[in-house]
Length: 181
Image (cartoon, rainbow, N blue to C red; front, side, top):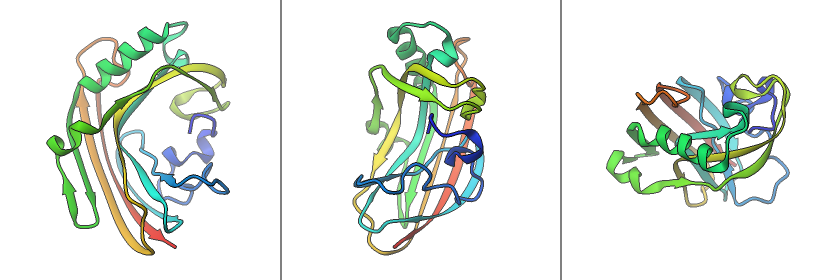
């Protein structure tokens, strides 16, 4: 997602028409459903049947594009502080619902990794290029989808009072109408 310009990025896509950007012609066994930059989104998305879904119920990525020349440990601390402030998580896949307590065990954090931001990229990045990144959040990977129509809705929010938080108040509510074919 970081390497895709904002105008083409699934994160900034209000309808779902860009949901496969960066994912077509891959042999991956999963299909990534993009989060949004906050607010409410409803997207319709065609997904190859037989692929699982990666659902970022709540996530953050922090890079040196955000914090300057920070160490990996400083990036990890900033990401952890952000995600420690999560106060709601909800996921519904077709008729099965998962609440905050169900989803808390799916938190995962990365070590530092290299990424290349696109020029005019997401998160307001104007000058892209290489950077160090860490991520932290709550991610679900589903079983492979059978052919047919499916609904995935995920909601999450956080309230972070730490001055180092990138987003002191964040909430997203995303509904995907999935067409698995």
